[in-house]
Image 1 (cartoon, rainbow, N blue to C red):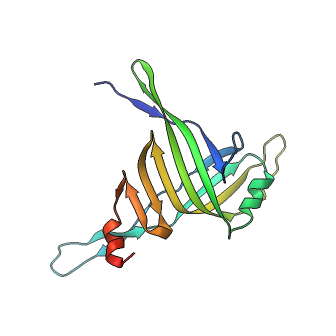
Image 2: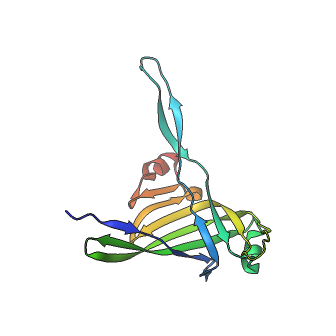
Image 3: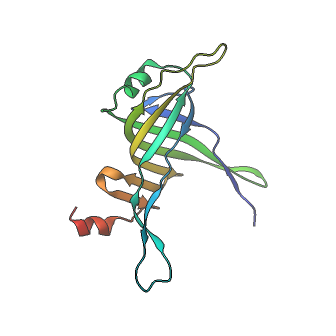
Amino acid sequence: MSVEVKRLTNANVYLNGKSYLGKAAEAKLPDVVATLTEHAALGMVGKLELPSGLDKMEMTIKWNSLYPDVMIAAGNPFQGVQLQLRGSQETYAGAGRIKEEPVVVFIAGQFKKFPMGGFKQHDNVDAETALTVTYIRLVIGGSDIVEIDVLANIWKVGGADILANYRDNIGG
């Protein structure tokens, strides 16, 4: 059995449908963190934690300059934005690269940090924006990996809707 190594080493950022090729230095996607609640009861030898929801999701994008249209979008925390990050994941085996497939992340949220940047001789201005994320969907090679919509109570993993019964039980 051959070992396969996957590499995703670059991506492009789209903000509200516009490409920012070469303008974002780094994008830190949100971590999906389950909120766990401690449970202890008579007769149990110990305590345990059980899932009770999701923690807030946040992401950052570091821009390599002050782009006016990005700064205008980042300046209004009341206006939602649509982000898309697109990369090409390579798979390597003993014979070299054997496959390339798209990795796409769809994000909806609002900017919460407006950067003014910083100036340093002979360096690009670093301007890091922060967003609160209400929707995220990760697609690898055309397959849905995870989709979370906090406002619509949607949480899908591998295409399976893990909150379907919950939504039915609460009537919505």
